[in-house]
Image 1 (cartoon, rainbow, N blue to C red):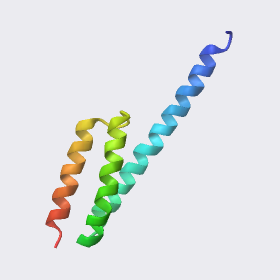
Image 2 (cartoon, rainbow, N blue to C red):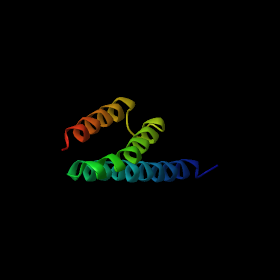
Image 3 (cartoon, helix red, strand yellow):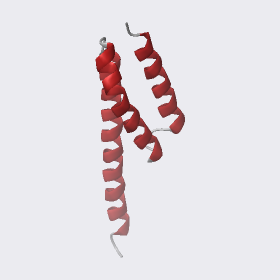
Image 4 (cartoon, rainbow, N blue to C red):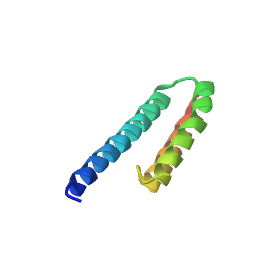
Length: 82
């Protein structure tokens, strides 16, 4: 059991990279939805974004209140589109 700490650090580094990837992907999809000016396209994208936010909140990659706030703001944005 000489190298246990090194293996642990490696595993944590991988998890951190994994979490950072999914958080960045989430931010990009939210930006893409906010950049949309077509209401039909935004309505079609919203369920996928909502599902992603819920999954990330469930696995504690983002906080559950942050996910709720983002979903609320995006829904308001979509409803304001003409």
